[in-house]
Length: 253
Image (cartoon, rainbow, N blue to C red; front, side, top):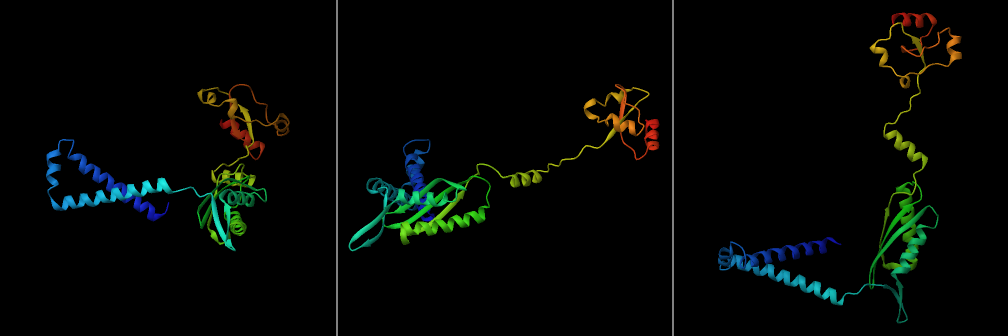
């Protein structure tokens, strides 16, 4: 809907509501006497007449449109030797759908053709990509192809071509990686830890569970001369750079 039509509809609706409200107050409600007395005021009465005329005019326009307007199914393209060459709206929609789906990367999920009897063809295509695409590049390409291909069907009657991209059927791996980076997902490799037996099993030892500790394999622990972990009373500490530092940490624990 254009801006002028929207403005006319707003004026018609507002005028009708105000006119009905002014007349209804004279019939029902606690202010019937006051509303009737306002009719004797010249400015109020003239304003009410203007609103009433706008309402009647709008109703007449809607009545005539409902009686005489017909849905345009064919558009007259040109005349040759007194004859008329016309094309149907379905043919234009089919041509647009064929152009969008020619390379196999997209599907025209919906094609809307708006036209008048003697021209002004407007085509709106809702494009469904099979995978993630560059909307700017692909949109420019499709728009150029549609403008060229539809001119062969509509001639100089083509007025506007618009595209609307919807969510693709599947997201490519590149797009998925970019989305995961934007969301802040970071994968961290687990550090190497070694378990040492504790002389005292206190309340602090109970705070460590098997699910939060990671122990080195037996071969690595034996190679470094580290005693094997016990089933209870374990404290998890990072592996030191030497055997002496590991022993010092065990004694301090």
